[in-house]
Length: 306
Image (tube, rainbow, N blue to C red; front, side, top):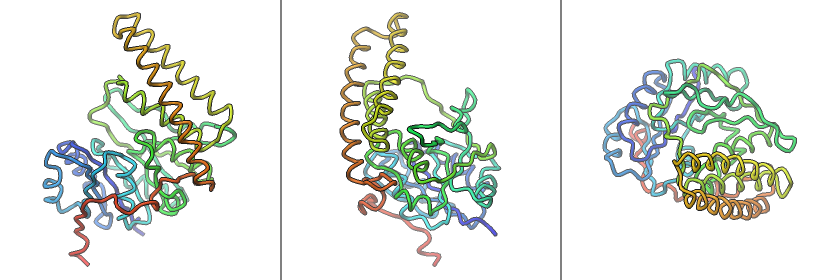
C-alpha cells in the first residue's frame, strides 16, 4: 500500500534553489504524494515560478518570516497520514521516499536522516541525549517526517521560536514517548552550507531560543541554568580566541556577551510563562491550534481536481 505522504517545503527568497529542490523531490515521489510549498514572504518571483509547476499541489503565501509558522501553515493544509518537512535548499536522495515508507511501515513515529553538505554530514543526530531523565533524539527540521498523530499530539511547532523550533519539538517528542528512527537512506544535500559565523542578532535568537525551550520543557531546575551557562561559556571562549587572532574586536566580543545575557534572561522568563500557559506534556502554547490567520493567500490545485 502506497504511503499517503504530504511534503511541506518552506521557502524565502531562494527561488533557484527551491526549483532545484522541487525537481529532485518530484523525481522520487509517487503520484499519490502531495507537495505543499509555503512561501513567506518572498520578493524574487517565487510565487509565479511555483504556480507554473504542475507538481506543486498547494502554494501557501505568508507574511511572516518564521520557519515554524511556515511549517504549521503547511501542516494545516496537508492531507497525508504522514507529513514531511523540507527546506528549500535541500535536494533529496532517490531513496528518500522509500526510506520514509519503510520506517513508518515498521512502526516509526518520526523518521529523519542525514543532511549532507560540502563538508560532509551535519551533526550526528542519531545519538540520543538524556535531559533531566528524558531521552531526546534531535533531528533537523529541514529533513524530518512525522506520523500525523504525532503532530496532532504536539499541536505542531512552537511559533514563539524563530530558531531552534526543531530542537524544541524533539524535546516534546521525547516527553510524549514517541520514537525517532534514523535512516541513512533518508538523505538530503544542502547545496549552500553556512559560513559558520554569527551576528549579534543571531546570537540573541540562539540564546533566547535555548533558554526558552529548556525553561518551557523542564522548568526552573539546575539542569536548565547549567546547560545554558555551559553553552555560553563554551561560545564565549571560542569567540575570545577569535579576538586573540585578530578576527574579532574586543568591543564586538563584549557586545556579543551582552546580547547573550539579555537574550538568555528574556528566554528564561518567556519559557517559564509558556510552561504555565500549557501545563500538558505537549508544552506548546503557541502551536497550530492557537491561530488561523497565518496564510495571506492559498493557491490549491487540488480544488480543480476534486
